[in-house]
Length: 332
Image (cartoon, rainbow, N blue to C red; front, side, top):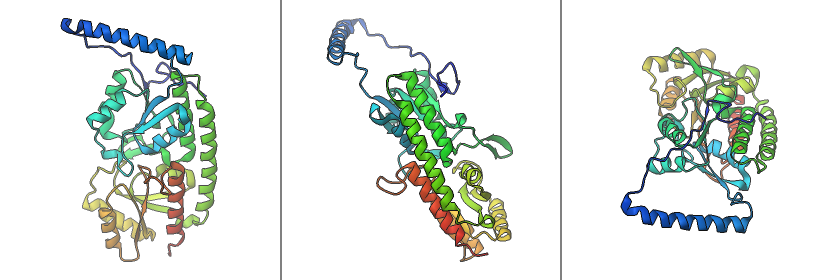
């Protein structure tokens, strides 16, 4: 594996922390006393552990529950993993709290998706990097697919829809952790998780075998299934909300064009998202008639704890089952 450090990849941002705070003369004595007590505590910790406290778990903060799940598989018991965007929430529209900012700036490693997915977190991620926190944006490192929005070509951020790209992402996380603490078995865990993802990919292929080639056409809520379509040989006919973000507003002309395209292609299923309202998808379905169904999928966030979509592998498999069921049952 390539060891990714700030000097090797500009998308891993890690800058030297600079202290701007200085104690006032009136607090010099208290600061000196605190320093003495801190030195005593460090000395005791070193004496008791024999390695300077190196056994303490690292702290990883992931922007989404999806990447938190991947990070937890790589981290094992050697790091605690926290997540910013709650389960069930849409990462496109999430706005950070002051507590989120503090969590980011105190982390040993921050894992973000990047490529504009976390639109409301860009400034606080930059601020954390400026404070010396290692911030890794994974999507730009995982062979992103081209993405056209408003006539501008960019990169599609929804890389987690392809389990093999996620397996590569686990390797990037392991390399990033190795650069912080090379004494722990990050790589072995990443390789084991990559094997699980490869097995999940085989399972998904088997599930989707139920969908005939002429029915592998999808209409989705927004453009989140490009990697799925590329991996499993589907075509995205259209989307209800144009572009890669759920925050856009479709025009009446765009919705009318989608209705016409679906009518011409004989598509009678719209795949919505559990993290977004289905109002627009329902409106398109009503224009097409009673035979059109709206099927919810789990996209930008894991499902509730204990549910079938509580892990990324569960999410991908459950979505595949829902897609296969809906499209294999479609009559032409």
